[in-house]
Image (cartoon, rainbow, N blue to C red):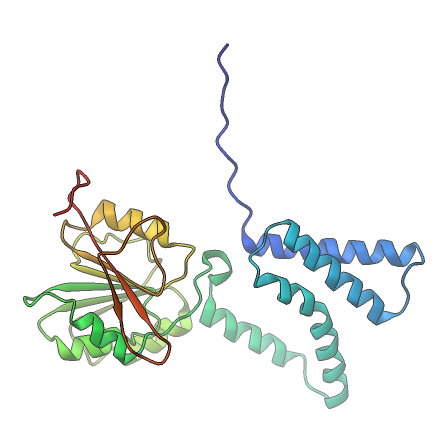
Length: 265
């Protein structure tokens, strides 16, 4: 007998898990209220927050989602009450939301927040560049905080930054304008080829690192480097780990791309 195996279904996106947990919290609180087990605003709010947090745990959301669920509705009620007392126009909340959207853009989907690298990190990366003219790609480049010092120190090299979020991209566009050896792009970090780059620098999050390594191994030339700030490639040992020596204790994990047959160059 031939058994047909079905491919595993893709995991539920974190944002969808969060929405589902909050809706289940509302349903649970309504059910308790109609059963006469709860009365008054704050008992209902507490019940919704507790149920939502429990549902998020059952859905295996990341741990840092749990305090968000626990505090979401109580803080929303407190802010509404504050708005009434001080006469704050609701439009300010919309403005704050739009500002956060422009800064973080698709972070809810990619789970890659905005991290800005410091000058000490740029100096450490500069020591990894070949002595000859080379090309470095910064994926998720933020405002270009790594590329600008590198472009000033190595005018013989070519630097490319990719950033998708509109606000960081626009700020970066203005800041890198005086560096002719920086190409500044607004795009998804996986959309373009990495073939022509000697070094790819990433300061992302643990979530995309397997995909980052897969793309680097498939496209980058043997002997080129993938440098990840803080986050490791799961199941792969870095060729070296560099301690930057800054206040945040930054570690750079350096991976050298092997030949296409899987051997080291």
